[in-house]
Length: 218
Image (cartoon, rainbow, N blue to C red; front, side, top):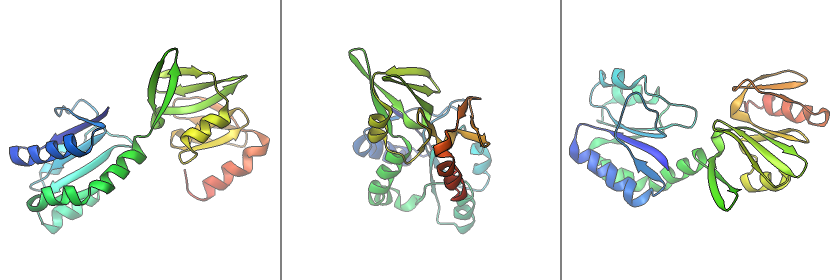
């Protein structure tokens, strides 16, 4: 499930967002806010400038979605935009704007929290694409190296890539596909990932990698 939290001291506003999530975003699970935990989606109500200080240290990563609920006050709206939020909901129009933006919110969630379903014995297990560091092809198997460890499946690399698409991934070797968001740095022979993995670059794939970099995809 997609971990979602609503931070609001106003019970009515909290209930409006809660009802919207439960009714229209079924992949989400609403959890009570805890500053020590990381959530996938934040709905944060801001009433004055000082409120930003409370939430500037929330745990987040490149996939975290943040929606601000606030007044029609230019200074607060401007500060909100500095936090790279997805949308600013005007508190006096909260319910109608949630309904209006439903399709956009669903598209953002789909883009940020896509899953790959792999077969583990008789079970099907979901893994979030953003949690994958790289994918390795070995004989007739693939090995998915992820934040949660290694996962193996009997499948070829091409079939896997046809399933998940290449939007966030790039093939750098006949046997390796990497998550572009996990790249730390690279040289002419190796890509260094954020988990300290070192993945070799195939000679035939060097230009592809360089072109992607020049287009500022990384």
